Length: 311
Image 1 (cartoon, rainbow, N blue to C red):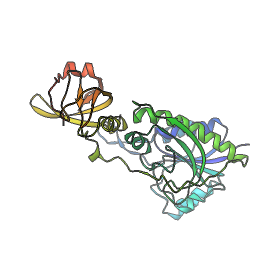
Image 2: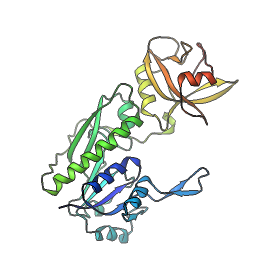
Image 3: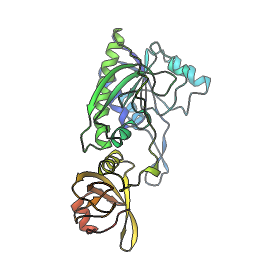
């Protein structure tokens, strides 16, 4: 036996789950994903989403509605006659007609330990907050924002130096395995649903460009968590005078270090910088228009000596 599934997702993060459902023998009636967006070097070419590209390789029909306000779009969704919809980072709000448009409803793969970090950026926010663990949850969707009952949980430890990019890549595979397991249980009528607790709710707001600049006046742990939580994208950054003019530099990795001084002051020639309390060592950096480089390679092309001010 197998389920007839509508899959809804857009970025790279969603692709392993789509492939896991296909590998498990389920029938994917259709894939819904965000419409192609301008891309390429000049932004003139329309780029299909990673899920769109993966679905085409798998020979699965792809639909790219802008929204589900049109009654015809809702009717088209129902006409797939699906058992369930699986949603992983789709990027569109789903109206009740879609949430209830299959026999078993919609199940979402969400990258946090709900109710902590509901919302758009759970991976980044967990790291920025210094969380020691997170996970993937399979949740039955309702009309709220990530408020539905939880069906399955897979916890993942967050290492002291783990970046958002590294955690993203781990969770997308954990999530694929979890969703495949959940669909097996759903098919045999053995998938439990547990309401989320009302306490411990936190919202993971979308990352705003205005919060990406590094504030070295904070504690070293906070600075370190900020850097790794925004790595590799959009990237935490500072400004420093290079060749007599201010230049923006992204920091992709860092580590806690010994030392103290005025916040933003380089304490050593190998990029140990003072914070409000404590210090961090910047270990991988990228100048505007340049490649990410280990600190030693970065310093060969851009010498920054102790006493330099980063802001």
